[in-house]
Length: 230
Image 1 (cartoon, one colour):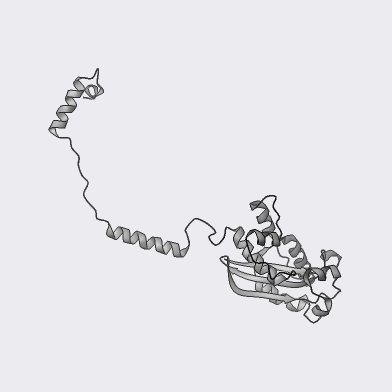
Image 2 (tube, helix red, strand yellow):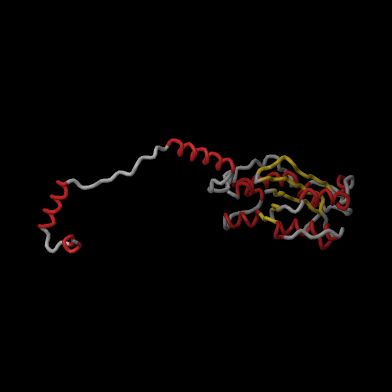
């Protein structure tokens, strides 16, 4: 099972009023394990980057203007994510920005049915508790020392660890149905069958003395059922 943990950084909060994506980070997971493959893109937003946004992610227009616009890397992005499940923290925000960029270029929108929102996962698992990425990292003792600013790739890496913990840690279920476990169980079953010695069934018939003792006991009973059956 392939999943893509994804995060974006933007110039602001609303693509409908002209805000744009300035950074995309993606981490590839196979069966909930990072493969080492990732995608990291800085994007020229073709507009200014407000000071309040720079304070969050540290990406100035001077820096971003040296990087490609989204149209130049859209094929690389869509190829990397494919049709696989996307794991995103506060997914509606990122999907809204991504779909605004994709729509401009005539690409199909990303459907929310293929998205796992880790904010919703956290709120279901820990009702009433803070569900920010920082708060979840602290809850799961995930190292935040390198996160002085928001960054799409770093946040994706942290989110991948949080996602694993939200699933239940490295053992995501108690079904023992992985190929490795199945192989071991098959070996145990085979060894057990080979060691088993089949013995004939034993017959435990009463002895004459036991029959005599039983008959004597029945004679002492008032209206015993054994005489009715006989």
